[in-house]
Length: 514
Ligand code: B12
Ligand code: SF4
Image 1 (cartoon, rainbow, N blue to C red):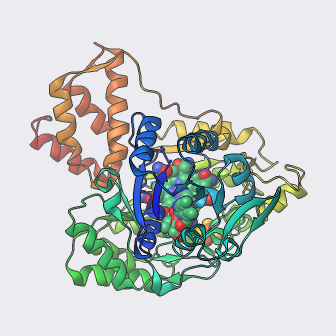
Image 2 (cartoon, rainbow, N blue to C red):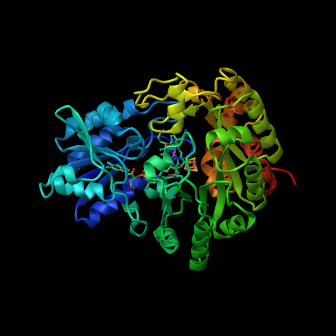
Image 3 (cartoon, helix red, strand yellow):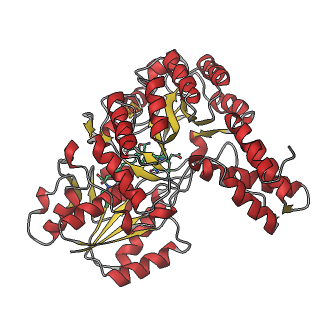
């Protein structure tokens, strides 16, 4: 069967994400003997035209659309996807199936809203080839795991069929513009056995952990490097270092293969000890993104976290000591949060000085989570709300103070970002670039040269932050960015631990006096 896979994600913040899930579904379909084409709309200047042309050239018999994000930090995205699906349906009579994490969180409401023929809740490697078989009349539709549809107005959802730990696939990156993404996703496990009150991950990936054999993970990296893919890898595991022995074994395999990947990962403070961090660094890890959520024991307890403030603080210090770029994720305004817990978190951050902080003020309420049940109990949402349209929990001890307190604090830390949950409506720190600013050709050259001195993982952020800073400076002067603006912007936007190497680089390039 001719299958067209379409990734509709156009989000570029904080990084562009390669559609790993769809690349795995592609491999599964190919193994089952199907003719697979793919289209990623991420980099398209005219996505609708591209999509129409692709449909015309492929003449697909099934179109599979991946829905990654329901919302970004500033926008509700499903209405855009609804239009894309309507366009696909106008251009072809082939059935349209939607899947992906953004779909699986609320399959019934999303299927109804987006108007596809079928939805697939959960993993696609087993189910999508089975759907292709069923559509060819070989098996009944009712036997396809995870399949969702409306029949005569009634919603039907088949039970899922998760992959076994030893049957993970290699992604078909050849079908995607893999060299263009800021980072290439790689997965070493699925599932999470913890139960943080707001989290969708156990629902998406299951509560039982399935650990992929470490040698296979390292081999996937080696294959990509062999194919000349140079983007850094990003471990999309909800927690790379859980269990720590598995993370350590992956690093051992990478080191023993003698490959030199660079990678980043999401990590928990639990088990992020100096030995593991040192080994991760040796294996090519450049940055860890620590899901601390808060640095107050009282708030951590209410969020259902399994670690203390002390452990979180120690893990940040250890990551920095190991020479890794350390980003801390925070979730502000959760159950029981008050001005004291907020200030405690901010004071602790001030002490440990992570390189980056990414905070959300207000907690997205997802269906089926303990937070959703609490929100119903507190009268914030109604019991049957499918929560597809974003709703946020803000502790009643804070109310509107959350935004003013957080804003005051983050304003003094330009490297640290805080999105108000209400930021779906309005961003706290506007990111719009000044208009009517042009670039001197030499300044552009200098910019690209200095950018190469920035660690690979930080480059996408540096490109945006430094570029914007240089333009803001130029807008206050001649209206043209010159090389001095570029130099000053690199100096002001470089996080403290990298100031020394950056000054050295600028001297080497003749932009700063010795
Ligand atoms: C890793 C990760 C990140 C990394 C991405 C790094 C990278 N290079 O990929 C970082 C930290 C940068 C990130 C950023 C963001 N993320 Co994120 N992220 C994840 C995470 C943990 C894993 C995603 C992943 O790659 N999984 C591995 C692949 C293999 O699984 P999969 O995509 O689900 O695919 C499987 C199935 O879904 C299915 N499938 C996939 N596509 C299709 C298509 C069809 C047709 C079918 C039938 C099946 C199918 O089959 C696949 C194989 O089994 C998920 C949570 C989770 N556990 O899923 C959140 C998640 C996807 N992120 C989310 C969000 C919101 C974001 C941000 C918008 C946050 C922000 N405000 O900035 C950004 C957007 C980034 C972008 N450019 O799009 C949400 C999306 C839902 C929502 N609320 O909108 C999730 C679900 C987390 C959550 N809050 O619940 N993220
Ligand atoms: S926040 Fe992390 S540890 Fe907690 S349930 Fe989600 S994935 Fe698991």
